Image (cartoon, rainbow, N blue to C red; front, side, top):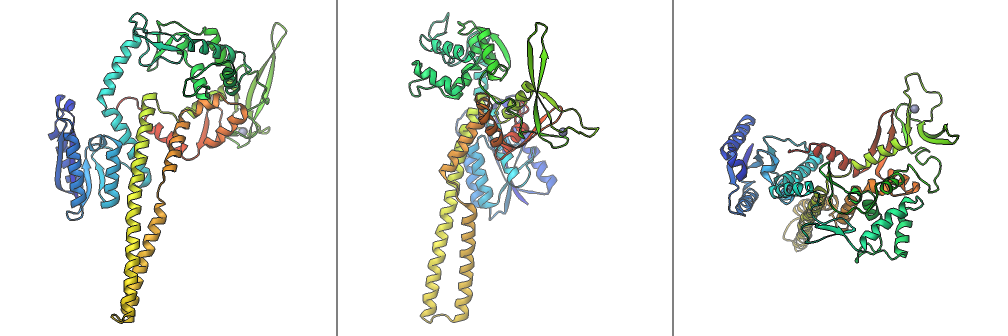
Length: 499
Ligand SMILES: [Zn+2]
């Protein structure tokens, strides 16, 4: 097999003694081991000159495109994914090379499986590779940490506060919006509001979320009610720092709202067992999970009720463990499960979204070009067939020649028809739906928390096909595309250091 080598080192790696020679050697050895012939090597050392790298990538891309067939190039051999492309756009162009010229990517490290699954993990890896190659971002994050340690938030202060030039107090309560935040917590802590009724009440009282969108949405309300910033807690990478800004909310009020959010103190009228009735099934016998209410007498004379969920099987086999969950624990497990759809932090989610958008756009353009080429060929074939018929009618060719040639053209026309049908050209609307779905997946857990029981059931149904409860775990089978998102996040983002 004929291959080309693509090698790249960053200036930082060069300083740290990791040379381009070492990388080239690893590539050449890998080629030799596999019995491949290296036709050409493309090397770029990330220099002070910006754009040099881009130029070499483009050179490589056009050279492969022009020479793949003649030189019988079947693969681009590279050390690791983050060597070959620094962003998703490059990844898409390389995918194009594979589609159009049959040139695959092969790595010395990182092997991707064949087929669609391989392509998917390749794209996610490309995404992660760019994230980590973005040194500037990491430096910015380091600077942020220091500011947080001093008790001030980084970047824009949350709703209810303003950023000022005052060096002694760079974050201060906003004159109106701080009142709105207090009102939100006060109203919600009463326990008789849903997000919707709370938003309506706020609107009637003249509270404004922002000029472009005056009414509070459920995402905004959930964000505010869950934000510990208001009780003076600054969080950064899992560590809590004490804020030096003025607090807007008392801890007791915050906790009361948390109880309501987590269903611990629900005064809204609800059916007695919102998660019963076949929503979950037992992992051991397949029966429905049912609710049970246990009353305990308190010493003072009152009665306290506890809500449990258990397997409905009244005659379990001897090896059937006891499947019995406290209501709170089960809710927590569901929220955790929905969280499995979410990227580890906001920076990554924002970046992932914009990359997804670019990629979908690129893929759409690629499909449209491919489609246009097929349609052009289709009309050419039709013209050729017309001409052939005319030639035959004019008596220039005999019947057997006409029939043979005609069959040939018809079969090509059929092949094009099939290819067009199979491609089913992506459309812009589908891209929008994909983005909307991604956005929703990132806040599914919040939406669930802020919803009533009917909506909660609907969300669970929309996200997963099966919900199976054992004595210790809740296992769900997710529907497409949530299954892929959760699976890929588990595999690709579970290591929080480097890839
Ligand atoms: Zn059971």
